[in-house]
Length: 255
Ligand code: ADP
Image (cartoon, rainbow, N blue to C red):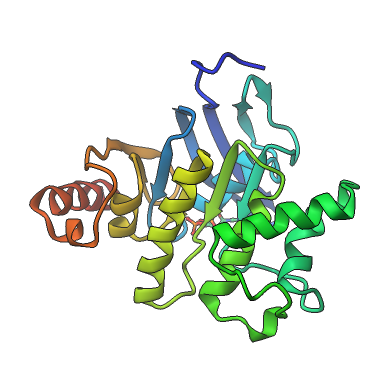
C-alpha cells in the first residue's frame, strides 16, 4: 500500500479506442491526472466525450487500449474491493427490500448476517432512509432509489467512490437536494469521489476540482480547482465567483 501522502489514483497516458468490423473510434486520448485522497472531483464534458468510458476503465470494467490506472499503488486490471460505483440506473434487485439490496455485496463476500445487517442499517441512516428498510424498489421515488444505490456502494467501505451521472434521471430540485446530501455523506465518510456529470453548475457546486473533457476523442481540456468555501450553501450558486467558474468550464468544453 502507498503512503497516505501519495495520490490515491494515478492515471497515465490513457487511451481507449473501440474497434469493430465497421472501423475504429477513439473515445479517450492521452488522459493524464492524479487524485489526492478525500478529494471530490467532478468530470464534465458533452455527451459522447468518453466520460462513461473513463469510469469503466477506472472501475476495472474495461481494459484501456494503452496507458495505466494505479489505485493506491496497485494497477487496476479488474473490478476490486476498494472501489464503489453508482450508475445513473441503480439496478436494484426488484424482489429484495431496501435493506436486502444494501446487504447483498456483504452476503456475496460471506459477511455474517448480523454484521451485514448492522452495517446496512447504519448506512440507511446515513443516506436518510430510516423507516424504509422493508420497502421494495418499486415503491421508491427516483431520489430514494439513488440513496439506496449510494448506500450499497458504501457497504464495503471503499476508498474510492465512482459516480456516473448518479442524478441524471432526477428532476432539477431533487437533483440539487441529492447533491447536497452527497456532500454530507462525503464529509461524514471521508471518501475520495470522482463524479461524472454533464451539468457544469452541479460540478462547481460539489467539487474541489473539475476536469473538463473535450468532445470526442475525450481529452482533458481544463483541470480547474474550485476554491469556493465549504460548506457550500444554495445561494453560492448565484455568486460572481461561482458564475465565473462555470463560464470557464463552458468555454473549455466548447473548445
Ligand atoms: P459519455 O459518457 O461522455 O456520453 P461514452 O463514454 O459513453 O461518452 O462514449 C464515448 C464514445 O465511445 C461514444 O462515441 C460512444 O458511442 C463510443 N462507445 C462507448 N462504448 C462503446 C463500445 N462498447 N463500443 C463502441 N463504441 C463505444
